[in-house]
Amino acid sequence: MTDADGDVDIPESHPRYESLLTRHRIEAGVEAGITSRQGLVAQGRGEAFDYLLGERTLPSADAAERAAAAHLLLADHPVLSVNGNVAALVPGEVVDLAEATGSDIEVNLFNRTDERMERIADHLREHGAGEVKGLTADGTIPGLDHERAKVDADGIGDADVVLVPLEDGDRAEALGELGKVEIVIDLNPMSRSARAADVPIVDNVVRAVPAITDHARDLADADRGRLESVLAAFDADEALSVAERAIREGGDDENGT
Ligand code: ATP
Image (cartoon, rainbow, N blue to C red):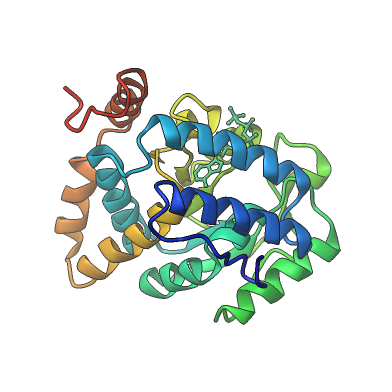
């Protein structure tokens, strides 16, 4: 049985408790009209990669999460993009991250319908969000077809740093070409989205979003120099290689050696 948030009666001692809970949250999201049915497919793909990675955060992913926090804190106008899977899995956590980094929240859907946009915006507000962007859709990302190009001109259109969890490859590439700093959360280190990102975070969104918030709180009083040194210490290509190796070697590659 699931409640409105997708919480289920799975014993916490179950070895794959977190994974099953995540799956049920997506199911509940579909039932509530927040998540698309294609979102179930994306979730299945994510689960497979998470399983191969050992369902834990690699040290290289933690470094990416810290770099993401530094980028969001350094930004003039950071925006967190939310799709149907993210809204189902981490609505309150996205609101916490927006508060910790002074970011706007914008709903951005691959299969955009006004009804689903409204439902997601309402769901985020129920979890504490103030303004939710994405409904005006008076801006476009060049290079994409009409529906998928829509953004708010004063949201993602104006952002200098964008967090796009679980973004599809086309849009991630198009956003990257706009010269914005792009932070992607994607469990597949070989996906086009991860490869297009300035900061690819190869981790489950349910672990990654709270981890970025923790780093942002830890860095809240850091000066520009310290934030820039966090960015300088992070190497995107290296992080992707380490994750790929961890998958090949059975999730035991803690140090990337
Ligand atoms: P590409 O970027 O190669 O074009 P795609 O557009 O085909 O990929 P989708 O089908 O939209 O990608 O799949 C979504 C991506 O999100 C997959 O790479 C999947 O691994 C990842 N993903 C799904 N669920 C999660 C999750 N909970 N946390 C992190 N990543 C996830």
